Image (cartoon, one colour):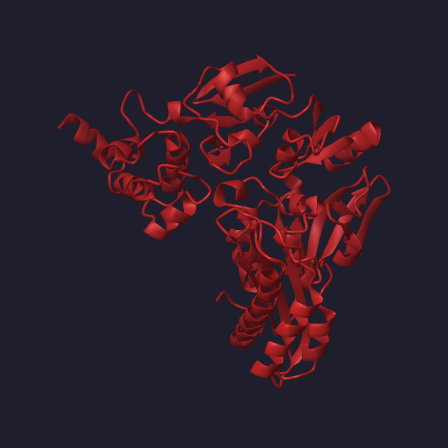
Length: 299
Length: 162
């Protein structure tokens, strides 16, 4: 029987209360939301917080709200809510693509977007999604909010810019016209981590050229966007040859490790192939979405 | 710490250590051993119970997190001695062999049918995709859930009486 080491438990009554508790108990305190990454790590003693600050009752952090040219998602929004949100699906089909393959349906009832991002597992899907969409993280501390991009948010594997006495409260996604996105993952079975995955977001110019493009990969040793492949595509009409070359450049840019999920060569192949697929899918969705202001549509 | 929650419609309260997982709280503190405990890593799904009506893996929920909430286990599926249609379906369609995954499968099935009374086969398979049957009896589990969808509660009562 795997049981976590002893800890003390406090239920936060507000975000400010959570910050006060984190400040009081210091580095030995840890926020728990869905708990589906943290609790298994605690059972394996890979994590041993002295205090758990439970934020599950903070329903004020559970929302999906359109606010002008951005979509604001509360950090406590469950995976299932994102998957089932028509607004999210229409604006950012990449989120729905990814949420379909985040863990399994029962786990998605508990797991949250904020928890996924703060866990910062290198094989985690939503980090890639947020990076590709140019999302911003709203982090609250005793002195108020600060807003940072995903490149700054990710410090390293299992490490983010959220300080011990801060709380990720919101993720903001910029809404762009004539844009769409896609995500595809290869996993050995439902609920497993990715062998490899790729995500892409595109914005089309009036003539069908790629006004802007973002490419990201999961679980293949590259947390930044694939600048080499993006530079190749940006400003050009996306021909089959160009997309194939973007796949080759992505395969060359990644740095996967051979493990029980696959060989280095296989993962490199997947990174290239999945990049081509998500580019084609995102472009097709953006093209189809032209009639409704290019806000994308579910495939 | 002290926790109070509703389990199968009855209020229970206990003093527990904060590290007690919901599955062990149910089995050891309340004696409700119908909820099974399997992989310990939120993969196998035999420990699924409903928390406020939604299926959750109780090995990855602290009992403390359920404080003030409603839990439903396999012991709470029947209504006054009449088996839930899901339970009937598992009997009629041979939805279990060794029975280890069964309680979790049935709680997920009940939640699915409460939200979607007429699911497609794909929707059923998707709903139970986070749960493992090591007898690999998925085909009969799917048929059991389909049987329950085709025989909602009133119909089951008639079957029982006939």
